[in-house]
Structure formats: structure tokens, C-alpha cells
Length: 114
Image 1 (tube, rainbow, N blue to C red):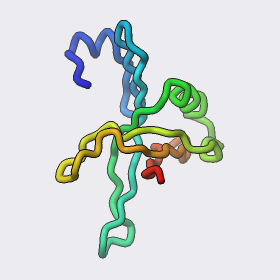
Image 2 (image 1 turned 90 degrees about the vertical axis):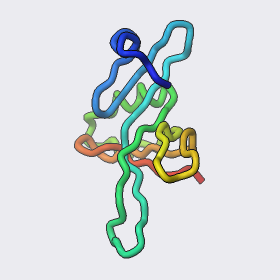
Image 3 (image 1 turned 135 degrees about the vertical axis):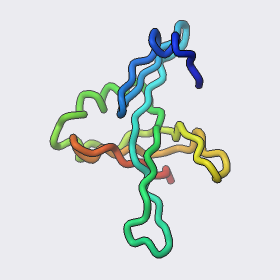
């Protein structure tokens, strides 16, 4: 979804971690930024991609409630869908993910849904 600068100002609330888009006559769309660990041969730590996941409005509300809570990692994961195209890979947009809260000073971790 691409928004014009005017639409972004009017219909989107976003920061570096969270985004909510509310266009007229449509359901709100909610996004959370997180990291996806990727195993890489010969790199014991792998790499971590910074990506966005689209989540339901109810999941987004709960994530907001827990955002600063120290015990947020004990919350069950939320369902989401990858909201990015990753260069050099087949279409990644919409791949199901689980969104795991990790703590108030770290971004959520994404995992591919089974």
C-alpha cells in the first residue's frame, strides 16, 4: 500500500516501531516492526532482518498495552503476515508469521508460521 504524503499525514500514525493506517471506508491496517533471524552458513549468529508485519487490530491493541511491560515476553505470540518484499527472494509479501514480544527495549521477533 502506498500513501501520498497528504494521505500519510491524514490517515497514518507511525513511528520507528508501530504503524496504524485508517483510510476512510476501510478497516484499519496495523503494522509492527520486528526482526527475523536467518541462519547463514559459516556465521554462528546468522543475520537478523528488520521487517514489518501486519497484525490484526486486536493484536495491535494488545501489543500497545504490553509495549513497555517488563514481562511482555511471556505473552503468547501474535499472528501476522510479512509486510515487506525482500530483494532477491521470491514474493515474500503476505507470508504468515508469528510475532513474539521480547522485552521493552528490543523489537519483537518474527518467526515463519508452521
